[in-house]
Length: 218
Image (cartoon, rainbow, N blue to C red):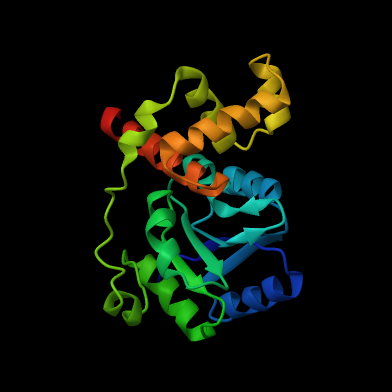
């Protein structure tokens, strides 16, 4: 008999989370520890309980999962993180896996497909829709021009490290003794050097760079 997996659900729709909980617990092999509606709550319970599985919405009121996934994975490295999204997951697959996710699940898929994805993880496999492979989502590559990060100055590196950790711009400004407007100026320069146009893209590229460096020097 397979071990009962503990599960944490993080989402912004209580009714949807409850429905997911009922689906997961029906077979007796999954036990939902709790349902949480903010990243802070979810990250705290993940850090405390180290569940085998975390199901998390891609979009939350505080921002997308890119801003917190790396830290949550670091706090619970043995947890599998499955990201639930209303969007086409093909474009999200590679960057989220590189940040520590174990898979992506479309909210439009069936309960059976969700359970199949989890079953694959339980036996050590990553599942994805066949149509993604047919449309070019495989193989997953890690070559994403991460040398751009090396162009950042020491101050810019510090700012990005703090942003990835979820620190507010106002607090970062206090930490390096500059104005809040100066942080905006730094970010414009950072975006140019990283060849990105949004905060989420900058976090994704910098977090991936940091993760690969840790793997090299571990």
